[in-house]
Length: 272
Image 1 (cartoon, rainbow, N blue to C red):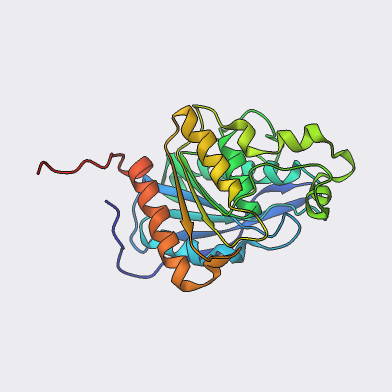
Image 2: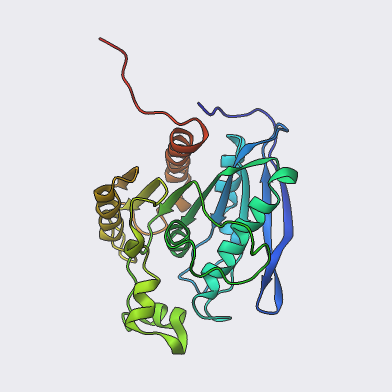
């Protein structure tokens, strides 16, 4: 079982991991307090409705997960004002490929790279678990797999729609259509090969209804995928910006990644 490590997490900022369009894409690396190798990795993907936000939003999670022994990478991706879909998933896949290609210098086990994201970032995290052969894009390390070992999705949009609202239309751009929206919807990739997934939501979310997580849970559970759903009562969108919620969310994510990836096990009670 993963335990909190003593000491201070080190953070390396503004590391280039690839290119998006004509510019470099940057990330921040969070390293555990104690040196080691073949540690689990976690890619952190920020939210912001695909048109705003930055990787600093998940600094808390990066530091806290590193304290449990994860090597974290908080990545940026092109926002919809810079490039329409599928640029966003291209960039996130490039980030995961970079982590795998640099597993040795990062000190991680390339088979134990997990992903966590919030809101739009949670949508992108779930897309990583879906059709791994599509949306590869460029960005470097194209020969490296972009598969992940497990996913944490906090208040994720799971079914996108064309002409639903201005935010999603801005994401799709001029090429938007019902077909494009369907291909950008994680729930349409819920098959038996999907990675283990933990979904976290609030039941007072008026931005992304918690039905998005409930529907994803049922779709994954139906296929036999290891999946959990945790719902916080009275919690609105972005509720984990409050420390009293961020702490239990971190614990839930850490326990899930530990049970499913780092030290795989099932919950077996001792004989009475």
